[in-house]
Image 1 (tube, rainbow, N blue to C red):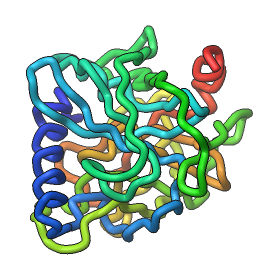
Image 2 (cartoon, rainbow, N blue to C red; image 1 turned 180 degrees about the vertical axis):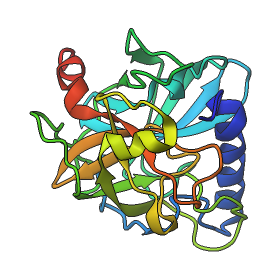
Image 3 (cartoon, rainbow, N blue to C red; image 1 turned 180 degrees about the horizontal axis):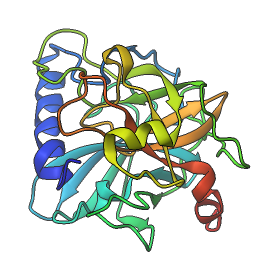
Image 4 (cartoon, helix red, strand yellow; image 1 turned 30 degrees about the vertical axis):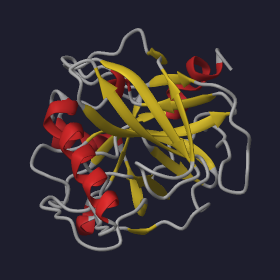
Length: 258
């Protein structure tokens, strides 16, 4: 597991993405093995530009769940060492540092049992001022019930790395990738015991979420089933599974404030 997300990954990715966008020389430092996303293809996607207390900028993702709420990973707000002071939530944009509807907030509630050492309960709720729905901005319903979604092909989206050694090239923007959900037992063979409150996807074929995608959506059949939590320290292209907070496990916690 990668500890201290912001200094290990997020701060570097923020600088990389911002430089690429400002140069208009866009590359895919994004989802690994995926494709560019069209504007409006993932209307629930909320990019996060994160201001840290150490006066640096980091990046994550989130999913819009109402006009005033989004869900993300707890480690995007506090990774065990670095504390965020403000999120800029970016809706309706395929670029992170410009465009779209941008709303600032410091109203973030992490799960009370979030543990950065074990990465347990890695989920948080963002509350922000009212954002109107448009063709490109729309909340996503939350998965509920007992479906484990094993074997389904789910969609992840994010502003994170597109390869383990990504440079700045051309056509950088929001990316997405199709990933197959695997059993927690298979996931545990890589990471050790994976609790039922996580859901995992296969890294087969070098397809993966990667650094910078944290907190972003894993969706299937129009509902949110996972919130990007962690991958393997060896990298995103080596075929290891990725783990997410399982939305069905946290549905009641998320909706209690809606």
